[in-house]
Image 1 (spheres, rainbow, N blue to C red):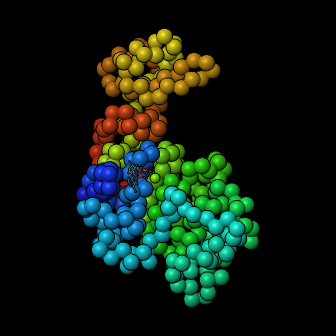
Image 2 (cartoon, rainbow, N blue to C red; image 1 turned 60 degrees about the vertical axis):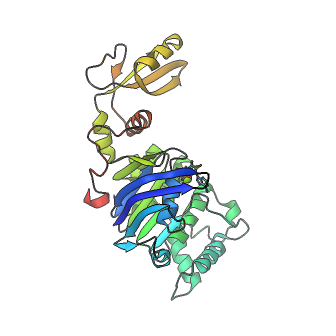
Image 3 (cartoon, rainbow, N blue to C red; image 1 turned 45 degrees about the vertical axis):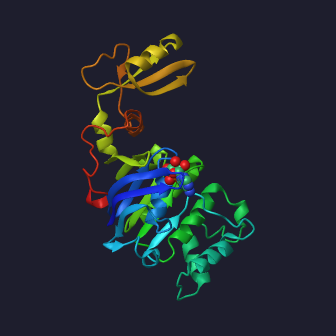
Length: 306
Ligand code: ADP
Ligand code: MG
């Protein structure tokens, strides 16, 4: 179990990036969903023992990560958002180099360990090719290969799917899902689909605060019956924005398709009820700066025990 208590990070400036985060995460995939600047990377760096928080506590299976980061590094895999690559090396050579830097112990030799890891992330065939020829998805998989060396108890991946095309994203999902079978995988993302596809539980972070901690099903259920869609004339748009909580307004075939959030009882003339999606739930939380009814933080445990 990963436990985070009242975590605060204030960067020089000062910029308050984390304003008191409390979160428990057990085995399985856990999503940390939030917009740019929410504090996701800051939180992940602190958990990875690479950034000292201003105050608060982080423990992994009861062990204090902040007091003794070196002890936890052995059981931790981390794929940073800005993972650097060595374009002129082959995938295999780069991985070996990273494993050496990381001080990974490999009784059978680094070459053999690299081969096993490359196999695990479906890069065995591309292992001799130069990294500069790799697609975005292949690079991220190489990043995963170094992160899972040593079979870590916890894997932290920071916005790994940003910039991947749909097919690469799917491949990447499969690898992450497999890795989450017997460990904690903490995935940060601003892409709702990542959470919808992968995460039995997730938290929403905004402006350094946890807005919600819930499951995709509960988040959708919390707004079921309160989402409506309608076509709105350009001239009516301002009025609709003034009168309703507009979740989304999209130009579709030259017309404004508008989704609104309208809890029971309110007037929604001109709008049709529609199924609530996870994206709706997320956008409602972003717009209202609040948790959804019945989805209070800490209401559910993560992963398999949910
Ligand atoms: P996210 O990963 O969700 O986009 P970050 O954790 O990167 O968010 O950033 C959270 C906030 O902290 C932002 O306002 C960002 O500008 C600020 N920030 C991040 N790193 C630093 C830094 N090294 N110095 C000052 N401010 C920072
Ligand atoms: Mg980030």
